[in-house]
Image (cartoon, rainbow, N blue to C red; front, side):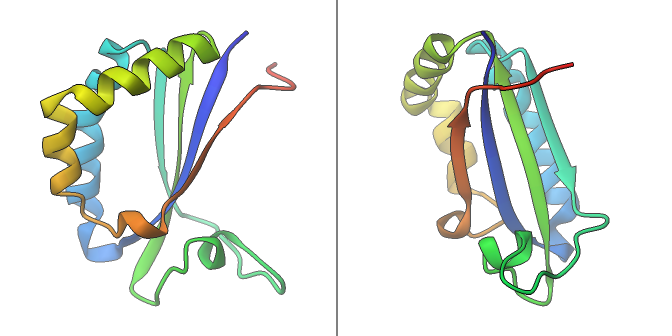
Length: 117
């Protein structure tokens, strides 16, 4: 069964192109490590909530936009092995040193799909 890593992060609007470039460099590495699909989405229609919302989840500031992304893997085992490879790979370490956003406010997690049509 497929496995999905999901991410939500606040990115300064002025860093949109820098973020896109970073994502474009990272995607082939994720695929090299076993991912079957990498999707990065820039906020377009993200409403403010009363109790919570995407912006609140990552403590987005007025000059920031929300990015919602996911990486698909064939299985949790492939994802776990990919994560181990990523942590040891100097290319990923280099990308991590120049992130165009505050990584401390990123939320992420692994998910087992319930429905995939």
